[in-house]
Length: 413
Image (cartoon, rainbow, N blue to C red; front, side):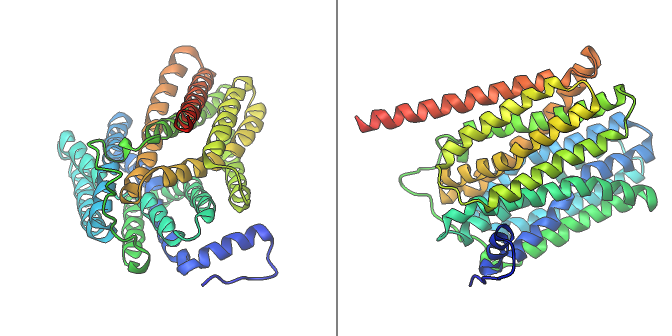
């Protein structure tokens, strides 16, 4: 039952009421704890491996292998979740990942052969449960009779993710250097266990299994076979690329300008503006079609990515990224809402997982692109690449919308 608290601002009341629906705050809080692993684990492993081996290159390979395996296999795990249920798939996956992480730490501490360590990282990443997709699937189930609230729920989840993307690395570094690097890894693994087990224990909000509709026969491409999903996934991939280009470019520019310490504050301003925009966007009563919002917000995001070309000084970059952040969370919430509408119930978790995978793989690709371009062309080189990716996103969104309109017109005839 929805409580209707008084004496609260309207925008805040929207979220309080949302979290009161079927005690949704419980699974959202569990997801918040579980997401700590995403923002802490790779960095914690890098610090631990560097301390033990002295090699940043090898530490990067291990962390990259973990993240890449997670990004590539997350849709497969989610497909199993859609078929067998969150609890039946989630419990073995959590147990397997924790076991492999423990083996990975032991291998690092005992100077095991490096291929063994990388192999254990790949195995752990492949069993990394996509907790964000599981939480959003629960929101879709809880709000099945109130679809107008889905965008608000997905906006809230984007804000929760932003909170730990800001705080997670700070916690990881603090634990590593104030206590010990291995403690940082253990805390990240502990958040994984606590968050996921708390989520999986909540049977009342677990989405029931849905048989595939005869109108949507199984595709060998899984959820990617759903009309429109590849386009949205490519846009999410572009967002991930631009995020990393912006982050690495910020570090390079502030270092070039002699104020390397400003990078953290500038990136925090970017995240903070994104969170504020997400709060406002989620509280709005939106009447436009989600496809229209997707087009407008993608064009806005793309246009703002081009403003990075104006950044030559650190202060200008700070302003540009604050403005850029205003489009980030709204677009993120919109693409998740669009997938919610595009993908059938029987494939929803997988469809949502494709977005998370695209963002993660885009982050990895963007970091590589940023490093290569900055090494070759200088500290400003990441920003033109980001503008180019933004332009490609805009072309993709406009092309898809045009194709949709032509399909509708052809059907009308």
